[in-house]
Image (cartoon, rainbow, N blue to C red; front, side, top):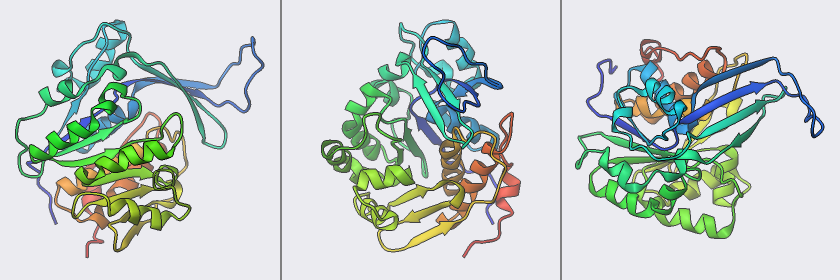
Length: 316
């Protein structure tokens, strides 16, 4: 079994912002009133931020590729990503902030400003990446619909990443305005430049415009680069990989849920780390589900160590 650190690097591109998590809210208060909640947490977040924090805990070689604002929150946020933040371009704007309200059924409601993440550009990203990928290097693009300027440049960016020799994974997230035929067509137009598509259950069905999860996964996988796969995260039930021909699945261990925010991002860190370490997709599913499970059942947030994940003996 592989035990040494990989030489390859995972570059995580996208939204790194501040999360203010508050809960638990049973029902919305009347307008003009004030509600007291039991707990709150101020922490770095965003799809890219959550993934990078998990990668750091796992000891996976990585780089956070992002940008930053210029208010008093910018330095606070950058301190959590000390190895990467010196390369982030600074924009004359406020730091992006998301307020997450948790509910008793573990669902969440989010409120976000725009801030610095909407200004992240293709040029910003490419300046932080090597001109040529080393063997095994991978780029994860996440927070797709929130990084507004970068989203407009996705097709060109993906083509450049492919020319530079990177493997590419994409976690689009859910479009704020929902799916429509124009958006589906646009995304499906650049999937051929992606190796992995990492989505949750609802996102998979929405992008594929399908009511059958496995069929949707296979349909999307066939649009990816040769050998690519669609990875579907479906919460407490686990995750699956569809490559257009077969389905691999892995159940999630039962946990006492504390905070599900960032579960999918933590999964991405575990899944892609396993691939960088040379493990197969079945083992990668195991890593992803276990990293996510530990994250959502801990407060303050924790992740399993690499040694415990490598002890998994389920390889084929």
